[in-house]
Image 1 (cartoon, rainbow over the protein chains, first blue to last red):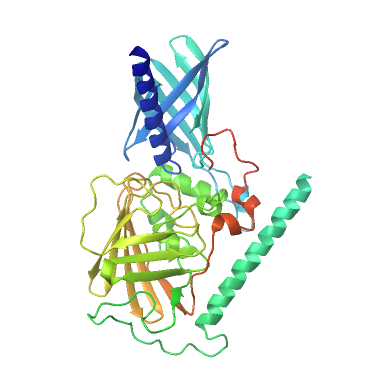
Image 2 (tube, rainbow over the protein chains, first blue to last red; image 1 turned 30 degrees about the horizontal axis):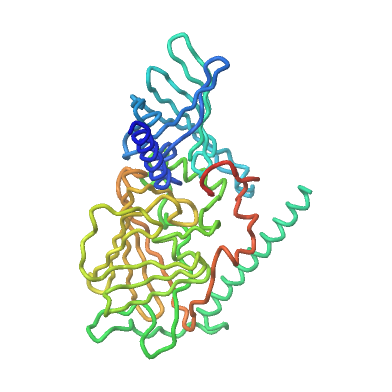
Length: 141
Length: 273
């Protein structure tokens, strides 16, 4: 009975994660399901983050399931880029930079999005909690 | 090896640009009667017995389609006048640098993006079913349904590439509202951003036999601070144009170009982009 319950939980989480991922491919850069790890010293810890965007604010949680924790704040700020000069190839332009900061479970994660509006976007940076700190990396599923 | 790959990509790019250019020339030639003669005055808007305009081919006459028209939705307006949210403007700017459009990877691309394929679109109204189908040649052999039976939107619409479209007539204009769009495609070729909160209203007016006027209102609180409406686009009738079998996944001649300016695709992710 106990194992059945665990399997149902795992299945439910997988279905939710897939549904969120399927619904968010090209839209708001943070929306969707992210998977990766954060490091504490030499130890690496799995990290799953689900974020939603309602047009005004980001909400979400980490590690969906019985041990989930809500994201208490999430902010994305942008450093403007620069378009390519006339006559240059478009790829000569400088893309904007998307900075992300979110707080969950007492930790503050700060990072930069790579490929922020493409399907294979990633978020890498550092986390802090009191005197603790480490790195993290996430990729959007 | 890398140089050879680049040469091949450039060669294919040149072929595609030439093909698109020729299609454009062919468009202009078709519109101008393939010569220097000015285009003769267009016949009036074709109508059904009940007086409603016919947006597709006229029964009893050769089939035809609408040539490609819309490329980028911001039209006759400054980019700064579009009420982008900051992230959406940044997304738009990135897409001008790295044009990595899902349509080039054979993703079905709905609403306004349908009218930007070089092979045009065909409108097929089926009065008995109270539906219209819009078929865009040049995509993954797909079509869009517009319900004309007066129905309401379902409460929970599963987001899709074409969304859920309901049409109604306002005078001679077909007004089509679409909801339930996913985020897997761009709504124009330049990457004007949207989210799954998008509600799009399109207005189709066939002002004469050869002209379809097209205006779009974008209402997407996930990407814009308020709704905005494009300038007017004009689609041109191409008599004799007939749908042909085009399956993007099969006939795409430049698969390397699907990567845009990126050099590789991350194959470790679960979903193929």
